[in-house]
Amino acid sequence: MIPALTPKDLVNLCAELKKKGADGCLISGGCLPDGSVPLGRFIDAIAKIKQDLDLTIVVHTGVIDPSTARRLGEAGVDAALIDVIGSDETIREIYQLNVEVKDYDRALGALHQSGISLVPHVLVGLHYGRLKGEFEALKIISKYEPAAVIIIALMPIRGTLMEGVSPPTPEDIVRVLVTARLGLPKTPVALGCMRPKGEHKVETDTLAVRAGVNAIAFPAEEAVRLAESLGLEISFSSLCCSQIYNEI
Image (cartoon, rainbow, N blue to C red; front, side):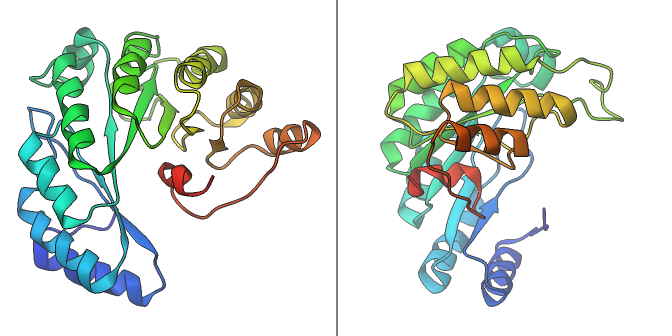
């Protein structure tokens, strides 16, 4: 991530990215105790970027309120990304936020009403590598006509409190993928870039192909060969996997 600490910084940064040939920008940041990303003072800058530079703007919103969602829509934001958690226990223990599952539900409703393309993410294994709330998250998401759904998976990272946690198994990841595929048959489903690497990735990616996903970020070669052997149409894109709804 490239820092932009003020609205002016953000406009200047996007102008530089445009000069270098960028097509778009993902705007992200840390969240507050209420789960929101403090985007408010940047919205006018985002509107200027859309008007002057015509970049695709994708935003991590966090738990957003209706007013901010409406303003982002009016600014021309192309897509809103939000991690949806379906377990109050996970929100308290892992994220340690002062919110509940119902707040994620309301945030999805606010984004849906704003008219912004909605691309929710579900993080498999967030609760210490175990499934807890992922299927409830998908049930909530299904109410709001998402443009796409992205499934990602816990990657234990050295130096964090979860460095010793076992990641979710490929089978558990694919259980969530299959549930998304069956529950949202007309919605593009992608296996996102955040997932365990190595042999775990090979197994996950090949199972994901068989599960019927529309896209895999940085797929294992074995998954590409499997898709070819199954006669699936394959295309490659340099865009963020959240933009899959524009690709198919």
